[in-house]
Length: 392
Image (cartoon, rainbow, N blue to C red):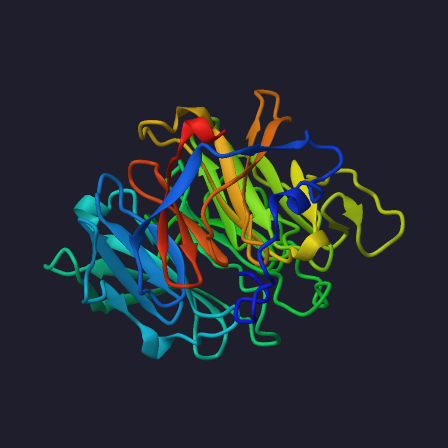
């Protein structure tokens, strides 16, 4: 989660200043004005995530304090879908951080929440919907996984999401403090600083998939899918290209997006040996075997914390030109950017979009049709939509 989530953000920067913040090895940023945003809901309290069950027209919005709200037919329903505020330690980078609906939610009613409990530990629980489709059964909560996280309040990660393979993926932060003092990022025996992959359809409460890369090793946890992450607040699968995009919040200088194959286990994203594509803990470091970012930007001009989004795959009229673009923002500067990868994985295009003021972007969301949303710290849910083509 953005490290300065509850501090006053810096003033929004003009586009001309933003054009100097990209990685020198990337194509130059170009401006685009063919997109806009439209308000879908207002009045939410710290909305940190949005998703929808497969095939469901409703939007489910996570409020950091511990509630999941529903937007249906353009209306924010007054009764929460789920309220676990009594179990959640919220504030700063802690709280209820995401919800993931099972791929077969329409028939089994199961979903999963990722939050920090009252001790500060990362907690994943399973719940079920009640007989009322708009209200979960609060008594159905069952612990799936708890990861101790009591030494620091920051770097909790925050996303639970099902992959195209039906497995549940969890992005965990490195445990907090500056520079990964516990050494979790590069330690395969630690569940912090990782992307985890578990099978919630087998085992009790889960099984470790046999094809996870560290299965059978005595010096590692079998749940680990990839390592070397600092604070992967958001990651996203693109089934159309079988790619996984990971937006990792940087330390003091560099924010980054890295890409791997969706079925590529064992990837080492480099933290804390590297911050972005630069050495972090030594002047000269061995980059062999590390996955370096495809896009990065510095903290120049007030940037501070990447907010990763999704690859746009929706079918809305007027949006065809951005299909295949991965969208992202920065909490402090609040711009909107995207990039598109070529077939060989290189960056083919980067853009910064002239859109109405977003406020401090806490997260992106995606509905069941693949349309993208932006969640602002001012309590708004914004839909990414086509703008005036003649203006660009």
